[in-house]
Image (cartoon, rainbow, N blue to C red; front, top):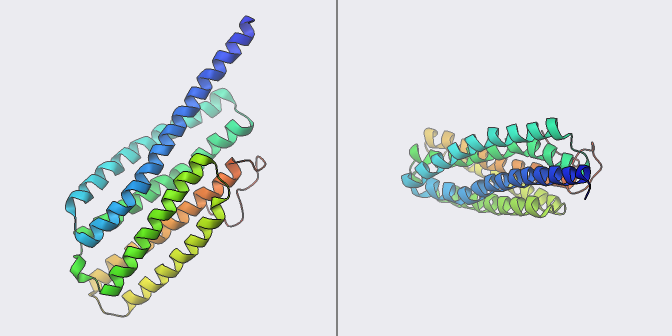
Length: 229
């Protein structure tokens, strides 16, 4: 093999190794959101302080991975001048990193509400709605993680429908909180919880729409109608 060609092959292998490492770290972030969401809901509804501590520790890992991945991606774009599939991948990573970070912060905030309220402070209907929102958000994030890993553009429409269901649950929870059946401090805290679950659904849909772009839409085209920054 000519030396020039050999050098090109080695260069590509090194670049591919970097891409694989970036993908592995991104998958790690997905896993932390998907795995920690049920723990946060459980902590909120049971007052599990040990779970809150674990969630906070995991959030510090997310905070350290985010800039690490961002720096590597930016460096690879600058040094390698990637095109086509590689460029779409790197740009997509840059776009979903904030979604992943904010999502895990929302997960931690849900669990942290257990430090401010007791599960007995919640009305039975409020507890039921929180359980349903937590279950739905966890399902959405498991599907979003699979969507990214498999580069499955078809998941965006399904997640969009589930996000509509999340919006309906959010409206129901807000109505329950507005009924005056719980104390004002609890109502205020649970209003934040409702918002966190709603945002988790929005972030999941945004990432799925980015996968539509990553999976093969034309470079420079938006990932789909309704994508929000």
